Every structure is written in structure tokens, then in C-alpha cells.
Length: 325
Image (tube, rainbow, N blue to C red; front, side, top):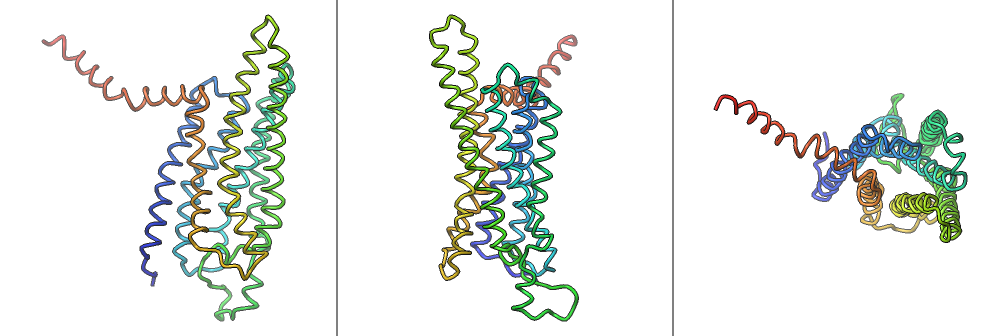
């Protein structure tokens, strides 16, 4: 029989559902905006769509699976592992999409004349596909053997059948050595540091160009680099929010691995989990407030499909009724 849900679990589930209800529509709106607006069709926005797809999956897939894990059902070991792995895949996909965006912005300011011949739609598609392939390989590594199965078999007696039934929890099946040494130290921290260096160089190149052109009679370079600076600041903010959201949980994982006797308050773990999931809801808000092209596309979608639909129908009915009056 299933265990009754406690008041704390009910509060946890309510917050997770709220995050999902913000994340899924918001990121679908981002994908929709890029699809319908020709001005959002360059490589940067294709990488942003890849990031949005990962964020939609967090809200639609990872959060429901996280709720299941929080309840802690009795299940077979590899079934639990399959529930735990999607968050690892999508985290890595988000990181690699952010890295691709950072590299793309660097190329835009480093080689503006040759940019379109270097970053073609085909190469952008290959880069996105590569990011997702690597994400699946990194995220599914526990399924290939780097997990806690052998450790659990040493400490617990099997129930006599082929299947090893456990209470499904993330830390029960996912190895902390994998989370810290492989996931964090190889696939999270180095890309974040690399992106920091890339954005610092992007800002440095833009400022140099703006200072160089300040006395020029031509306004085009000034306008180009001014626009690039605004977009780079917005995308750097997305990166900052991602790091702010994910680093606390990885720090807690490091404490769990390197200091087994240290007792981490459960509330800190839950706050760190909420931050990681909540990050998926943040990006559309950043785009809406910081990137004019997105703001325009969002308003266009709202006015065309939601706000004025009933008004147009009412106006059409009135028009049809007028000849009979």
C-alpha cells in the first residue's frame, strides 16, 4: 500500500506543480515566438529553442518524476534509475545549449563580417544535435553501470528474486562519486567557467569596438555593437541565473560525498531542488523583459491568438447582423 502523503510533501508537490505550470507554457511561448517570427531565426535563437525544449521537459517530465521520487515508491532498482536519469540529461543539455549560445555570441563580435558564412543553419543544427547526443551519454552513464547497485547488494540482502526492490530515492540509486567527480567536476563546472571567460571576452571586444567607433562618422558599427552588447548582457544574465540555481545543489552533493558525517538540513536540500527546477521558468521572463525581439513576438502572439480573439469574433458577428437591421 502507498504511504499517506504528509503535509510537508503536499506543500512540496504544490510548489513543484506551480513551477511546472509557469515553466511549460512560458517555454512553449519561447519556441512559438521563434517559429512565427523571421527576426528570431538566426543561430542564437535556435540554441535558445534547444534550451527552451529542455526547460519544457523539466516542467512536463522531470518535475512529475521528482514528485514520484519524493513520495518514495517501492520499485525495482533500474526502474528507479530510469526515473532519476532524465534530470541529468536535461541539465547537461541546458549547459551545452548555454555554451553554444556563448560561443555564438563570441563569433558574432569577433568575426562579424564572416559570421554568416561560418555559422550556417546546417552547422547550428549539427551543434544542437551534438549537444543532445552528449547530454544523453552523460545523463545515462548511471544506466551503463556507474550507480549504487553493487554497493546496495553488499549492504542489503536481496529479496530472493532476480529483481532488486528498493524505496526509490535519487541518492539511493545515483552514485555521489558520479554526481561530483563526473557530472559536476567534468560536465558542469568547467563549461560554466569557460562560459564566464567567453562572456568576459565578448564584453571586452564589444567595448573596444564601441570605443574605436565613437569618433567615426558611420553609425552602423556603433549600432551593431550596441545591439550586441544588450543581447550579450541578457544572455549572460540567463547564464548567471542558471549557475545561481544549480550550484547550491552541487555544493550540497560535494558536502554529502566529502563529509559523510555532516548533517545537511533537509530544508536546504529542498530549497536547492526548487532553485534547479525554478530555473526553467526564469528564462522566458528574462527574454520578455530584456530582449526586444522576444517581447515583440510575445505581444504579437498574445494579441493575435488570445487577447483579441473574442473581440474579433464579436466584431464579425456584429458585422454580419448589421445588414438585417
